Length: 401
Image (tube, rainbow, N blue to C red; front, side, top):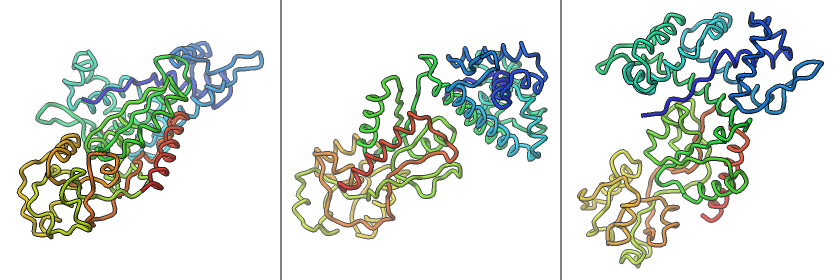
């Protein structure tokens, strides 16, 4: 089950953003129809949450600190994304959407996101540790506020509609701006910077290890989380904001319009065998030389399986499916300890001293390795340093290839 991100206090964020934008506590209080002590109290609570001062109080007024300027940028992006999400969901104009955004409550967002993440009212209430009626109340209030259907009855109970799904995803991404802002401020140990990386099975490991080593050497308080999995799941997690970057083979185009791709280098598929396999003596090898050997097949959902299936058909090889797996460790271990053949990427074969590539050209569309990112993602300074090191490492691998 995907985690539920903490929902920030919208009241505190509105107080801070208005004061920062208007450069005046009194003007901000007037704009929000609050007393100045109430506004000051909200900003103080936000500073305690962030763990650092966002304003410097002087006799002539209150001015943003360096951390305050950075956090204000994130807060502006947060509210801009909230308004964009509301516009997409309701179809209303700018003035109406701004009014809706001002009336939006943190409890409403928390309920929506919990239902979206868990798939039902009951599971969401259990996860949040509240009763189902306590969850339904703000969820239905949000539905009434926006005057659109956000929830529908399904076999497992009430869940989000297609509109509710898109709204929740965009709200989750907006909240990510505040999370990044808190990390950039760096005021509390528990708010240390966090980078979540999705890595595909055949992604060159040296890309991640070199960039990670640099990052942790220069930013020892940063935390790196690496998740490996199939492309479909990792791309969705990236699209939903559960990952920051995805490294590996690109799909061109990506399956989600909000994702974009950055090509590093070409890494074509190659037939693979153990280093001292008899077929390595054939230079060059021919399709006929492959006859008589057993194969390790990638599972059906992997792109290289389609390439291998086509080769076996086109080259009239007798290769029944006896062993099928999506586990890269299993494939390489079986190759190294037998005369079986399989299909991997050229780069992966080159990095494993137990394996060899078969000198036989495979006709398939270009396979590029690179980064997949969200289009509107603004990395923190530390995250940007990681991306730059990835590109340095990719350039080195490209030259070696």
